[in-house]
Amino acid sequence: MNRLLLVIGSILLIIGLGCSVFAISKINKQEGAQSETLNEAKKIILNDSNGSLESLETVNMQYNFKRGDVIGVLNIPRLEREVPIISGTNEDELERGVGHVSSTKLPGQQDRIFLAGHRDTVFTQMGELRKGDILTIQLKTGEYEYEIFETLIVDESNLSVLEPTTPEEILTLSTCYPFEYLSSTEERYIINARKIY
Image (cartoon, rainbow, N blue to C red; front, side):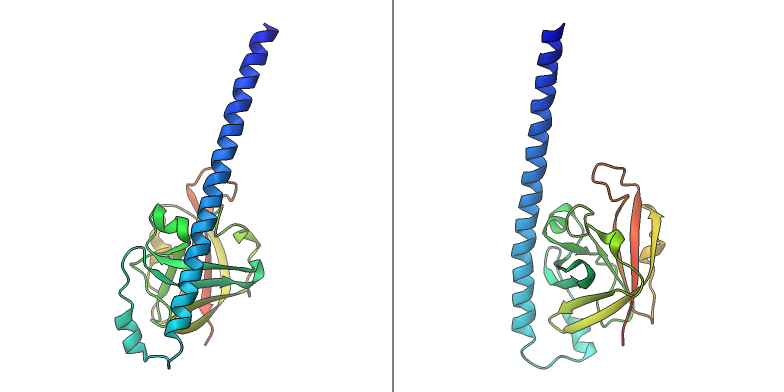
């Protein structure tokens, strides 16, 4: 009996170690992809911002991104974090950074901007952000600042967080809630921030 328990315990330990190694390698792969994409985003911003900023009309015409395109950079000063913004929210995009929901607008368009990210990578520690904290989006058209005014928890099926906010420009960040990695993902933690003019 003791020998059987020892064998079962050893098997469970090996499985646990295997799962840990797999999880760590996946996180390392995502961090590597995010780092590469962040460098790409910074190059795009740097290369395209050397000239004068375009008019809002020109900006609107430029915002025709394809799924997977690098859009810009989201800066979260309180967390000392900057992450690339990618067009789309499929798993491929979310592994590279925060995903922009294409049915929403982008900075300068005076409407809702919706960004989603994983709670265990780009949006870890989101619960530490508070009202009054500043978020910044850098695009090739310039830098846009937003001040957090509310946080809330909603059901994953609640689509009101995607509704237009015209003429007010609102940046909405979304990640799975609760924040624990192995917990249910039926709720979303939402952060709303107003554009600072």
